[in-house]
Image (tube, rainbow, N blue to C red; front, side):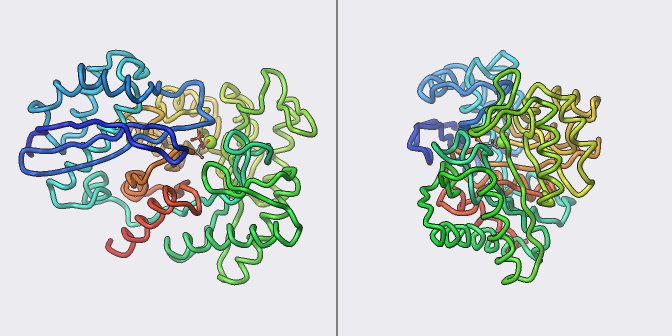
Amino acid sequence: MTLITEVRLREILDSRGNPTVEAEVRTESGGFGRAAAPSGASTGEYEAVELPPEEAIANARERAVPRIEGQVYAGDQRTVDRTLHGADGTDDFSGIGANVAVAVSMAAAKAGADMLGAPLYQHLGGAFRGDGFPTPLGNVVGGGEHAADATDIQEFLAAPVGAPSVTDAVFANAAVHGAVADLLAERDIPAAKGDEGAWAPSVTDEEAFAIVSAAIESVEDEVGFEIRMGLDVAASELFDGEQYVYADTTRTPDEQIEYVAELASDYDLAYIEDPLDEDDYEGFAELTGRVSDETLVCGDDLFVTNTERLATGIETGAANSILIKPNQIGTLSDAFDAIELARENGYDAVVSHRSGETEDTTIAHLAVATDAPFIKTGAVGGERTAKLNELIRIEANA
Ligand SMILES: O=C(O)[C@@H](CO)OP(=O)(O)O
Ligand SMILES: [Mg+2]
């Protein structure tokens, strides 16, 4: 192992046009890694704290970088991440900023892989990682916090569960995205795209279900394998403290459970993320008990990649899977801990992008390294295809 000799930090653009933190890590032996922090719009209340990039960079330069340069070995990811925590001194990264922490953590992992001459997924997953590949969940229609005047449900996802390969799955999702465009055109419904590249038409959720189902069916006929539907309800954004407020109606928590359970059976949903508010462990538990074993109920804002919150979920039977977003918790080590705790307790760990992204491909490697059943990283758009095309490359070379 060689020492990290330099950590450089700068502001770069993210896909929403906002500044974000990029980190570069160099090692004594010439290893190099570069990574950038993503950023959420529908962020969970319990996420690690993202600071304005300029402030996060200044904090890290003062407090974290001197503890890493010349002191920590690249490849020793646990120590890199422990050092970031030590420099931060809080339990939510509000000291230096979770954005700068995750950028440094991921850049160090890439430098570690580079030093070993191994692809990142192999460095992270080890020689005995599983040989599975994640099924990409492709966002094809959406609204919520990701687009104005569109659906209430944040994301309608294509889940090509029957695809024989990642490559087939990636192209199937793009085809569903294209089929949605055709169906919208046929119906004379104009649509721009939301933050993640999904179509954001001004339609009701009901119409969106009809359009996405039809698009999925037509692509299924073409490709000859099973494609199911998934959702990210992002229900915390709809909840006003008492009820879930939709454009055309409101639902009490009990009605929301009933509604989502019906959607799960009517549309044979493979995946339902955040169907209830981020504090409603009980509601999550009830819904999880009601849907079939073939449906993942996933906690995003509920768990925020946090082992303490996941432990509460495990105790109460809330959800059966966790969404893993490294920037929600601040380091790769923390994300791995959440994945491990999930595994030990029979929860699936689904790796995910954020609505604000860069060309960074770390999550593609993380999903392969940890044998994740699904990865949620959009269907089209440069910052999304960066990850999807990386999955295609990993599959081709693995
Ligand atoms: O809610 C989500 O799952 C994400 C990504 O799709 O959105 P955001 O990054 O805005 O939290
Ligand atoms: Mg979500």
